[in-house]
Length: 131
Image 1 (cartoon, rainbow, N blue to C red):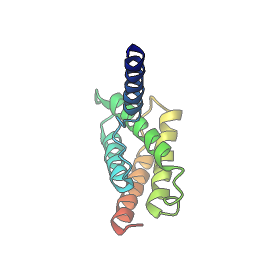
Image 2: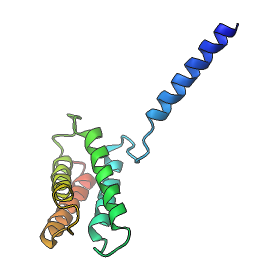
Image 3: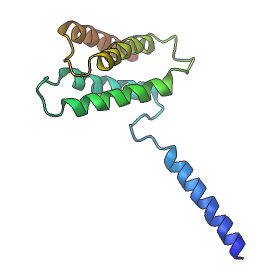
């Protein structure tokens, strides 16, 4: 009986740890449209925040994390690679991630902010059209 209870407890622990490990704390739900719109909002917040804002570093860190999570979840999904919204979003993500990696202490240049805003608007329009 003791042996049975020990194995049962071990199984319950493995299942519990497995389920907790599969949770998505960053908010990636698996719904491409919803995840993309949420990421667009996060990126806009990071872009529009004033450079002297005290929470600028935290917002940038959150944006980096969401970019990584989004890319990890959707980059291998072959059904999305042909979508205009996906390719435009990847371009925007590469631009902002490249800047954050190369120049972590410098603010985004105005030219990059304008290009990112244009690309994010294109992503939203493409999602509205379903492409």
